Amino acid sequence: MKNLANLLTHLPRNSFRAFVPVVATVLAAVAAVAAPASAAPGAAVEASAVRGDCRSIGGSFTDKMIPGECITSGGSRLEMQYDGNLVLSRDGRVCWASGTNGTDGVYAVYSGDWKFDSPYLSLESPYGELRKYRGKYTGLHKSGNVSINGQGEVWVAYGKIAGC
Image (cartoon, rainbow, N blue to C red; front, side):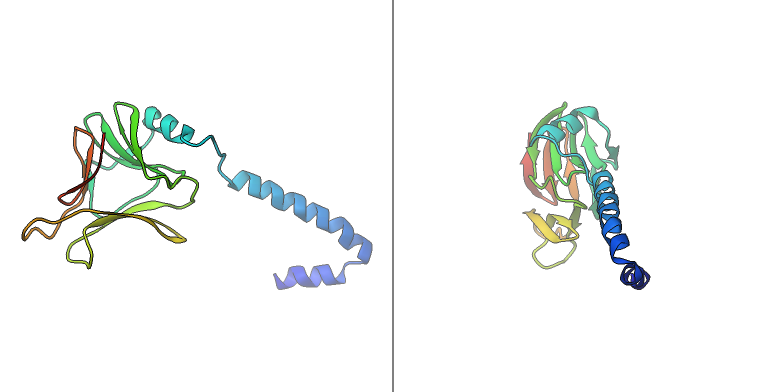
């Protein structure tokens, strides 16, 4: 960055004026390539739910689910989409969505096993926690996971949080 500042301060005035539009064009091109294409609200959710392009990590998870991964059981699945939305679908039909689409870097985290206010599923991003869905423990059972069953129900430990 220091070298760029030195270069800009030593350019003749006319060269500097010619240089600014070139930099602006390059930055705009980089931003256009790096930014995901946006679609109408709900369109990306339904298209992704029908395509079946997620990588199944089984029927449950106990740590983290990143974009492109899903948990499945029968015709039901819970998918962490690349657009930041956590989507529940059954037989290709969307039943529930977190509404966090449009936020980059969102992932799902299970927190349990003796942690304060656990168990819960949270949706987090580099900007912080976006949503928190509380599950529950029963009796002395203080462990669990996020799971989906064949009826399209999502459970956090022993508490149902969504269903088809």
